[in-house]
Image 1 (cartoon, rainbow, N blue to C red):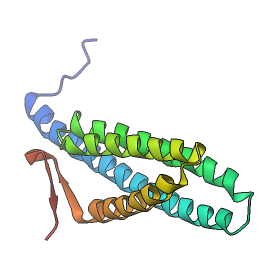
Image 2: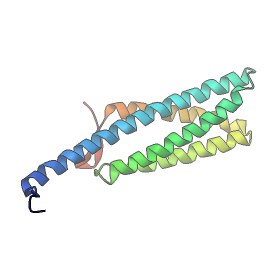
Image 3: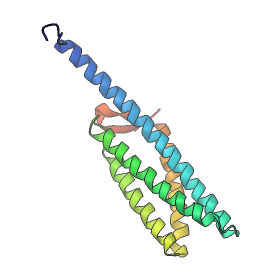
Image 4: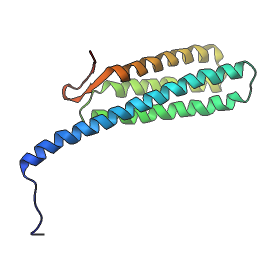
Length: 154
């Protein structure tokens, strides 16, 4: 082991911020991709519900599968938000936002299973609006980890 070369302290101080920045970019890209998928899934929910209501009964099964997909995407978003917060020092509020959204989607899914349509449809519209807001957020926000905030561009 005498041939092993130890990096000096200057190398360590320059690579740590680079790794952190690289990780931040990967996590930010992951969050963007997941939010786009969540938006598409939420939009598809409305399409599938509309097809079911117009008489295509087979779409109800697809609507159910997509509801589970929607919830799964939110769990992935929660994990990504946690990774943005702790390894790279990003903001903590996306964790809370995604957890609350997952609770709302879970409640929405249960209302659908119980056929509580009077609440199921308006909450679905609300969820679609939230998905649009998230889509706007991920493409207008700059993930600035050094200040522990997410700032708008411009």
